[in-house]
Image (cartoon, rainbow, N blue to C red; front, side, top):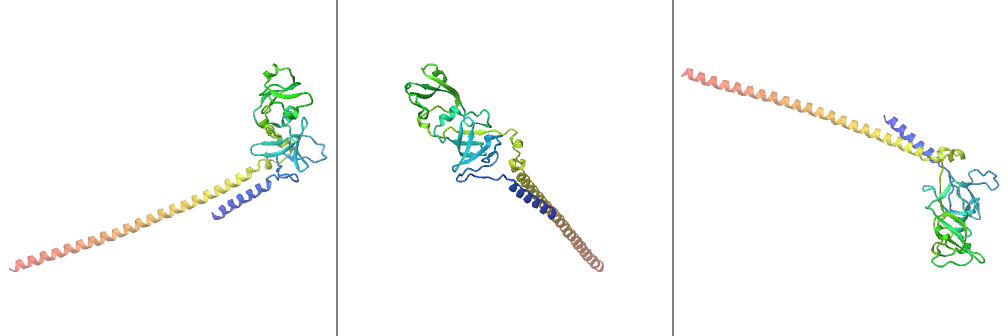
Length: 279
């Protein structure tokens, strides 16, 4: 039984070791802290293969970069694989230009935050407050605004585009990253990319190993409880037999003393009878 338990324990250890070996390796661009693993990968510099380009990253000037055909390069700020969250930075520091141009329809990505329709307007004159022009989109002799589509019909401006974006322009939210947060979907992508199933589902061998280990511990505990109960029952039987033996000896001794006392009484009566006859 001990050999069987040891075999199960050894198997669980080996499975956990194999699971650790099958964990997909993480790589980084030189000078960058972004860990790159499935579903992302670093695209070779001179590769002409463009399938699933949305998950191909580049190393550029100590940064990790992702390329979108509709926008160009954006810098990867962070990747959360558990939450499927990709945070980006605009190297031009004009996030609303990204909102205006970025087309995610042909990519595996979508905006992480809820979108709302806004209209980009190009106006030759400034609009009254509280509307604020987007500084990085302004040009010589015109100003660009993000407004509610219903308002766009009421001002003498040219409509550039109406598009779903995370938020309209605000001077309080004018950095180069706010709102550039994407998420991704992976339907059927794993098999197409040719990655091993053990890489994407790396936790399965670990779970199996833990399950086997728990089973072996359960068997061991059950065996110990069984032997304990068996030993206790056997001891109980032995105690009962000993008690019955002692009770038997007591009954025999009690009967002996009863007979001895009766014999003594008969002798006393006999002596009394003989003395009466002699008189």
